[in-house]
Image 1: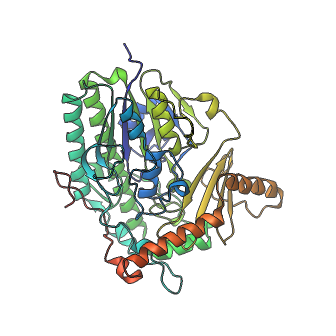
Image 2 (image 1 turned 90 degrees about the vertical axis):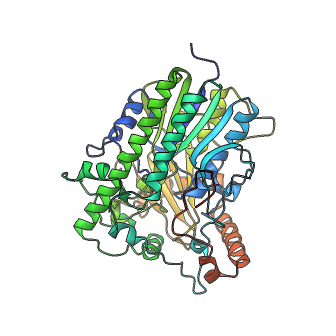
Image 3 (image 1 turned 135 degrees about the horizontal axis):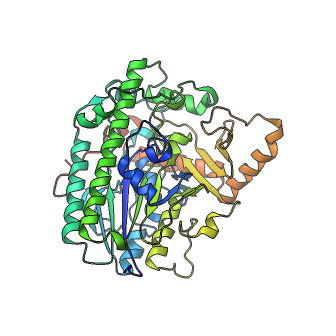
Length: 478
């Protein structure tokens, strides 16, 4: 019999483009375990992160709040425990709250609401200060991001080995501790985050296939802010067909590797005997451009980067696809709803429970994403409302896409005279949530202060590592 308070299993990946899954209609991607999860649960086809970069996105997932509300601007502003996380709420309500894998908060000593952290990966030192250290001439720092494309291939990395350890640790929890109920467990993988090195067996899954590479024509994405990003990461170059093919093969291989790890965790849940009293959620912190429009990595507001996979399955969860726009800010209200927790008087969050079909059927709903981090000179804000996606760049021209008529975002409609009312409405909806100009100025002041504290732009580079190191078995970084 299903308990009134189910267990909660949140499985997270890092940098998973939602289009790279079989259940989303991709006939090339091999993700059988996610496909099975989607078939027995609910898939949210228009789910968005709050910021297309790791640390801010994960702070929003924890707190159910937008980036500008909590000052989580970039990869050097990790979550430290304030405001309260869903872990705090569930822990106070009697849940055993455990995390296994990547968190990307400041460190395990902070009271983040996750007291039992296993194999916890947090930021390194002060985080990515280099990425926010603008030069005196206003230019952004350059990083050799293009090397990740050129070096793509088969093999093992610290990250793939780490993810295997996360699987093993989750299996031990589900085998030996799942009877201590109710529990909330977050299992968080790094894949398919770069480096684009996929284990051999998964890389070879795509060796003899036409990978159907997306169009690399910039087209509608020929925008000044996008060009700044491309130059900053060194991807403003013509990669050869074989280079793009190999990078895509590695990325798909990592997606399949991640899928296999998700499948192993779900198999452990089944073996524990608690699948029937556990709600399972799968999502990723943000997406990956994966070559679309000639773009790679995240950081931008294109669908491949800012949209995320989101699946929900378990007792009482219907088998359906929900097209209404939803956001990572909706995760905290969902967990509280599952646990029967009500916010205290005076507390509020901007999201809604994914179980609240009335709220999700509200055609007037707007969701927001924003970006203030590396590869940018000015802030960008995205609002999704109905069929339209509007992107506003402070001090730059906006973009507008009709995602029903143009799901691949090939046509920027912001110059259309017959859509001025749509643009005005979207801009007004953005300002109902926040003032983009004021938020941009606030973020820049805070970033400048933190860079100055370490001695300026050049010194900031000494506080930045190329990849967040994996933790040792005892939880400390390598």
